[in-house]
Image (cartoon, rainbow, N blue to C red; front, side):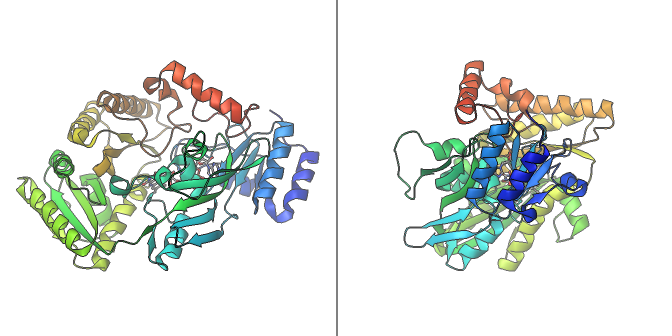
Length: 461
Ligand SMILES: Cc1cc2nc3c(=O)[nH]c(=O)nc-3n(C[C@H](O)[C@H](O)[C@H](O)COP(=O)(O)OP(=O)(O)OC[C@H]3O[C@@H](n4cnc5c(N)ncnc54)[C@H](O)[C@@H]3O)c2cc1C
């Protein structure tokens, strides 16, 4: 791969103008990391295009000169996906941030890749509409990043993840070709489903420039329930009991004792600090159905002997306070250790209690702090190991624990990534879960899109 010389910089400046290129050391450092805590690499240039035509010109120059390009939205991913480990260009989409069209009659919205998810929520709210996928980084995460990671979040238990809302998209291929894929309809079986292939491809196949997303009417009513348990395993059992009773709340989130205590230190809201785990539920839909489901969930919680406290939020303000507390969970974890291995394993919901038992046992055996937070309703936990990569002994133990957690999830018919992707963090584990011939097929697909291997090199494989 080539490094960027003066002539290439001059050509890029012609495409983007002065405002669209960053090259000072301070700027380059800002784009050298993401939300992972153990990777960093400096790009040579940061480019901030405002149109898909500019993206196309950038990619033509990069393709011709074999310059690595790492696409970046807000850089909130936790798998090292937007770190430019091969140097070259960081192509940041945050200036492509327009909402292009809302079609209220046909329930879709057309947005550019750099639109921040929360801005989309606020825009849709004005029209009584709802876009469910809610990665808890939604105050910063961009649509392009979420499509590329196939992001989920608490609402996934009832509403699914990004791919379930993706109708169509526009991309720029690594050689600079602009291409439209998919369309505007929920049903569309016309050749291979390319939008679904791009979704979750972690910026390795094409640059997403704009996206057509399905939206839903805002539910009539919502209710939040908080239940605290003496034992985290009982909390896991309650989750699987609720799901196996055919009740699908819109969210079921779990926070263990460590998280509850950090949240109470930051912003006390009355969560019981002596509980081993807190579950937060939301139910939504028609008012009568919401009342009934809230009742059913409360009854299942009350039947559990380890229940310590049950609270149904009285109004939206109280509900918001509880959900803000949940959202602070990841920040609490990341501010308590210089290196955090924030994992992302998923198992069928019925196996959730088994997974919790196994994680606790792994933590005890390695004498590590492993805190548990996650989207319990769909069996997706984020066991997070607090460590320090500058302490080789401790870091090695933490790495061993990660490997054991992954093996446990695989044994329980789960996956090593529910929503954070493989990126750099999980490359070495790919062969644990995918057979060699499947990996080769995936690499063949990568070669068709990107024969020169310039787009996000070094990721996934
Ligand atoms: C506090 C916190 C909470 C989080 N909670 C959740 C959660 O609940 N659920 C969840 O799923 N994730 C969660 N995440 C992870 C992360 O926020 C999501 O993966 C998010 O979708 C990333 O969006 P971004 O704009 O920051 O993308 P980035 O981090 O910038 O990029 C992510 C990946 O997408 C690629 N990419 C970005 N934009 C484009 C584009 N336009 N075209 C092609 N490729 C592109 C990048 O190359 C990279 O591989 C959380 C992260 C944090 C820090």
